[in-house]
Length: 291
Image 1 (cartoon, one colour):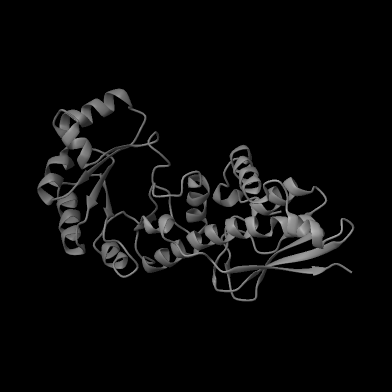
Image 2 (tube, rainbow, N blue to C red):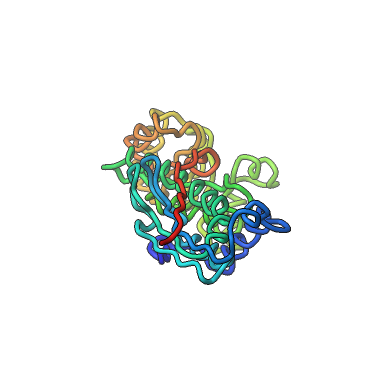
């Protein structure tokens, strides 16, 4: 079994509930196609096979999913999460009664293809910043209900997680500035008072705003829609003041531009498309009758 411990696989009580709901969504009152075609005594073997190159993610879900359908099904993971696979590689083997294997096929592939797509795209971004100290960060732009798994897949691809939700980092964006009823310095002071245990990040749109925020000593400053050249100026302004604040590039960050942002000296670049626009990793699940 692939446990996903290396990348911090989400707790089973949460993922198990998602698996159960996904199966209920698909099976409904019963898998009528399997009912009319497969006898209860027929056994089979299925293999999850890569049809394109990429990074696999979500394999611990296989055992959880097929265990829900039939405890007699056994799952052998041959290439664990985070592995780069080539077309034709057999990623996992599933054995047991043929009915549950057919019933769970689509739901299993939905998980693996979606999460593998996220991990694969993340790896592409990580490769583009190789040789720099720039981290590739995700965002909160995830499918509702899938955030923990999506961010797990980012880690499988070599990326890092930004905040998991609204509760684990204070992030003062432009709308907070305009709606906050005080100066940014007052908002920072209020944040420190109410939540001293949390890191604080402030979004800026211009170098002038950056100059105002840097002396406040926040942990992170987000450079929103800066160009790489403007980002280099921001890094220079930060470094000239010997500030320990970390800088994050956000907006206009894609596969063509992320290397330029990394060379400009930012500590991290956040990429929403890792989780909201990653294409599915093409995987197949092919079945044969067992001998």
